[in-house]
Amino acid sequence: MTGISLHNLTKQFDDVTAVDSVSLDVTEGEFLVLVGPSGCGKSTTLRLCAGLESTTEGTVSISDRNVTAEPASERDVAMVFQNYALYPHMTARENMTFGLDAAAGFSGTEATERVEEAAAILDIEDLLDRKPSALSGGEQQRVAIGRALVRDPEVFLMDEPLSNLDAKLRVQMRAELAELHAELQTTTVYVTHDQVEAMTLGDRVAVMNDGRIEQVAPPQDLYDAPDTRFVAEFIGSPGMNTVDATLRRRGTVSEIVWGDNTVPLDASPESLGLTSGDRVVFGVRPEDLSADTDGDVRMEVTVTEPLGSTLLVRGTVGGHEMEVSIQPRSLVEVGDQITLGVDPDRLHLFDPESGAAVY
Ligand code: ATP
Image (cartoon, rainbow, N blue to C red):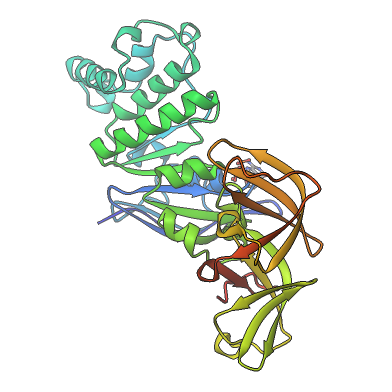
């Protein structure tokens, strides 16, 4: 069964197309992450799912029921916001039970039981009688998640719920959300601009750019086989290196060339529907380059960043900025010339105009 399904979903604000013909099926029980740069339309997509914005075109279905015309209150979704959106004058318990009243079909005992159950899951039993001002950011976020949990909705919609927390707490809460999802298996759509969060939480990740979905795939597939240059550069920390280059064929040998640099290619231009001399965008991830004295690529080092587990080296290669991730404690300094080998199985080519992957 489908948890939530979007079909040609479009939202126009005056002259801005915030969401542009988005179609997406989220399976029941799936954790789907929407990721992309600021302004790409993630929050608007989520708000359209929740019924907090009206659609310009297209449909939203929840559990195979078309809810496009239904108000937010009838959609059986619970939303968690970045700023927690707790009522400051109410205790944590009152915030969680707010709306779980007789009118919504809940008896007092039922509401109390649900809050206690959610509080136990989130480990906030001792905090229930405090007001938000007496709670830390992480605790407030737990209460906000608790408020969503007690509704036992068909779908959780989460809009950057961890972005107001400090880095350490964010990592901890991320693990807790993953655990919670494993336990409850509630269909979840989660918005973030943080691609590490997207990769670690999502069963699948949808990358948005300019109102459209560029690619939807499990995290490792997105990383290993990006469909577009945009996805290649966005996913990864740092993202994939991309440089403008030319394909060349010399006899039986095929190469990617830019400046004085030549990288062998295990496929002929013709097998890719291209010809020798065609322009391409060459892509390689920083960790798929290695410091190698017989390497194909020469880099002049401009920055070194020791990250502990790896040494990130930035430099110029044939006039293009590139980054390479090498062994920590390597003796590389700013100003050095180093040669780099390219893992032939891990290189990518993209069309310079459309950005579509061609290899
Ligand atoms: P961020 O990560 O910065 O929150 P986002 O990817 O969630 O960004 P949206 O908030 O969905 O992006 O916004 C998408 C586009 O729609 C932006 O250009 C934004 O300025 C515009 N937009 C969003 N809401 C409105 C509104 N109520 N009126 C006019 N334009 C809007």
